[in-house]
Length: 161
Image 1 (cartoon, helix red, strand yellow):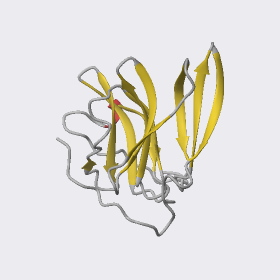
Image 2 (cartoon, helix red, strand yellow):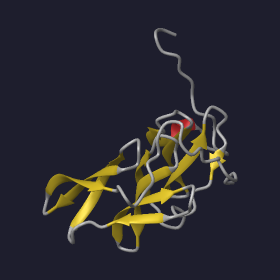
Image 3 (cartoon, helix red, strand yellow):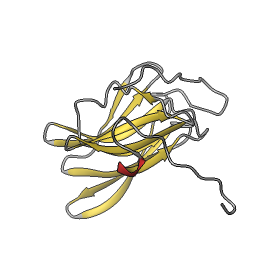
């Protein structure tokens, strides 16, 4: 096996690990987010590791397609790009409180990718504006509690069929 141990992520219903893309893992390694194509829609799926139990994400459903998932240290915060009507937007869900944060982007800009800092206090978003790509950094200090190692452990929650 070489220097690294590896294993496949368990199947999700009738679809397997090979149908996933854009993986992101929490800093503590407990949660894995990935994008899964299902019924013509790309959606973020969150699973506990190593068991593979699927965790419900309240605010992501109904705003497909999804892309670019990112997780904080303990998996408390899940950030992703979603479709809301004609707009592509960056959102962040606090799984502990159920709070949803929509990140304001300049008019005319389209988010392409994002990356959440492990403590949940900053998020970088690549935006396309006028054919040019640039990165915007958002400071979330004061809006979100830090998600630090040894911090609040958010339980997986109910399974999603």
